[in-house]
Image 1 (cartoon, rainbow, N blue to C red):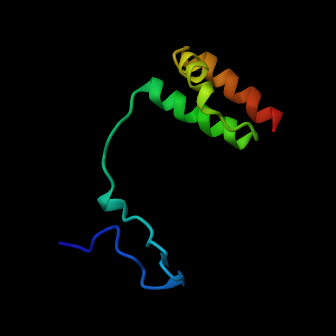
Image 2 (image 1 turned 30 degrees about the vertical axis):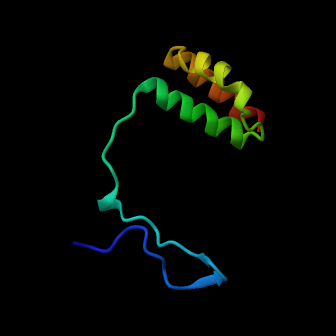
Image 3 (image 1 turned 120 degrees about the horizontal axis):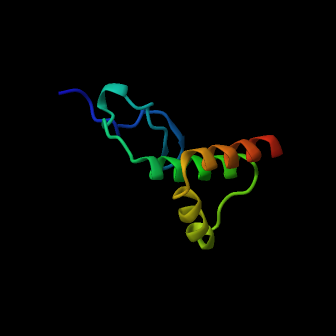
Length: 84
């Protein structure tokens, strides 16, 4: 078997702080996520990129927005991209 993906690179930034090697693409899990979960993740990413990081109390709103159809979600993301 190959080396563990969590092995350290051996270089130590500061005492007790190690850099991890980049992940090996062949060791990644091949999982698909549902469209609603993908929209939720995309919404989190675009909000954060727009300088509006979601707060824990925003979870219900994000869940409701993620339940909307792809076309509505795409419009929302486009608006946020233009606002940046």
